[in-house]
Length: 291
Image (spheres, rainbow, N blue to C red):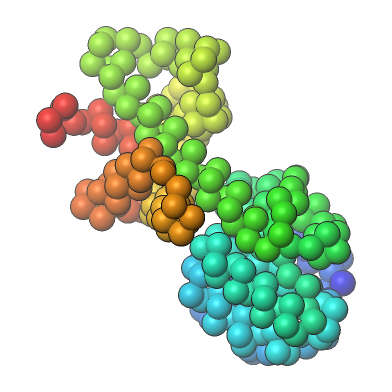
């Protein structure tokens, strides 16, 4: 396929490179001037769209997605597919999908899970929203860039799945870190804590696959001084999106709201910015009940 790729940052660059390695012709554009292995640089968004069967975007937020969609879609041919892999608010995803539909372009919102490592290794999970035809066209590309793609429903459904997933992730990571900090103060060895919880009813991905305690469980960012695999500020962004969505549909999400509040405090008022989201453990470990 002739594929355009807009947004060649930490996630987009390895995703584009994997498509190029698979034999697709990739033309890429990034406002920062970055590129990726096997990708032919383009001078503009319009140039990316020229002759493209598919255009993929990986962008920072919904406002930028709307701007790029407005600039990109008029230059895409009818019947082409626009795949947005950014994590944005549901309304922005639906805005882009409607703009595409109006122009005769198929659209898929397909945010990802798996982080930078998953992007590099081609092991991402895609949560996709859009028509059956659009998803079927995009699926072979998802299979190159990732290990799983789930068609969640119509436009916006991919974003809905992503923010619900990450609301759970943020809340369970906080609970896991709190429990380790409590175990410390109770004199319970962290390895013993892991051995019990990871095989009992308290197990979770945050505990079993991404343990926030250094030297415990599989290797994770905690073993690398909490250098981010998934930065705390990105978790804060996703928790913000979850609360924006909850307000939009009048959903009661007190745990999600509190998780957002705690990550905001960690990132904005403490030393959490630039650290992995699991660095909540040393934060709780250093605090008392009334801190």
